[in-house]
Amino acid sequence: MDKQTIDKQILLLPGPTQIPPQVALAMAQPAINHRGPEFKALLKEVTAGLKEVFQTRSEVVILTASGTGGMEAAVTNFISPGEKALVVSIGNFGERFAKICKTFGVDVEVMSFPYGQAADPQAVAERLQADTKHEIKAVLVQHNETSTGVLNDIEAISRARGNHPALLIVDCISGLVAADFQTDNWNVDVAIAGSQKAFMLPPGLSMLAVNERAWQVAERCQNRSFYLNLLAAREFLHNKGSTPYTPAVAIFFGLKESLRLLQEETLPASIARHALMRDMVRAGVRALGLELLAADEVASPAVTAVMVPEGMKPADIRKPLLEKFGIVVAGGQSKVKDKIFRIGHLGYVSFAELFAALAALEAVLVDAGMAVEPGAGVAAAREVLQAGLNKQGR
Ligand SMILES: Cc1ncc(COP(=O)(O)O)c(C=O)c1O
Image (cartoon, rainbow, N blue to C red):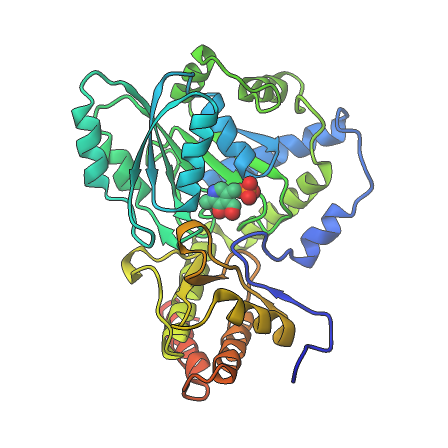
């Protein structure tokens, strides 16, 4: 078999993710006036739904922008030029936070951890304790680092601040809904999400939960963004029930439906499902003789970074997976670009699709000349799935 003869793909990316048919249908509704009563009701409903997902009572604002737009808004609305920020980086998206800070004149200090590792909360605590003059105004960090498949312990990083007044700004773009994220309980000041991840929507919306302390900072901040102005977004939300500029209305329709689906599944069940998918993929890939970038203790429930076998390039695996089987996985980024490929198990993914991916991966490895025990990947994943379902009493 050289090429798949039907045009069907299983998207196993860590975003954009697959879209449930109900969500796709919701987005096909006729257009409405974004300044009219229907949109006002829609905005109110999805904003309330998002608060539940963020586990917050604070204000949530929605921007028509990709996740990076949300990251940029978090920098420009809360950190003034010349102010110091500590970026805690464990991969490509941490580096992006640092680049955005530099672009907007923030005095950025980067605390980097090796690719594949989580941030050490103790190191953050020590750095902030040393900052006796409270020069650091914000700590920026990823919840789930998509480039390496590592989940940070945000609760511990938040606690590491002690009495230091720096804002905690967290990019939970690929982690929210896939892993627990308790904005209020963990004292996260600003949390940033994106539509094309576990929300099962197309790219285009970024949602930010902002607490009162952070809003006060925003009032004083020399904001340098016109479009990504969060105070304007809040004012329109409160006073007009709309957005300052034309929103991506169709994605808002989809968001209403995806929030309904999430409510039906429940947040704890979604988090448990993602953890189970992570464990299935990790067991399956290991049984095929491949190594993983991240240790089990810090492994992401959204995406698994797999080391490419010696002598191969990521494309040697990704290309046949796509062309022969229609399985779409991601490549590496930044420092591990040529060393890994990434299997997303985020959002609207079924256990059966993971079995399919592991079976296809086995075929690709065998074609490449690797000795693999037939069916080993699927068998290992099935065992993990069965044990997980038994534990859940299913
Ligand atoms: C953790 C994280 N942060 C930020 C982004 C950037 O989001 P976008 O590509 O929507 O701009 C992504 C996207 O992959 C991400 O996974």
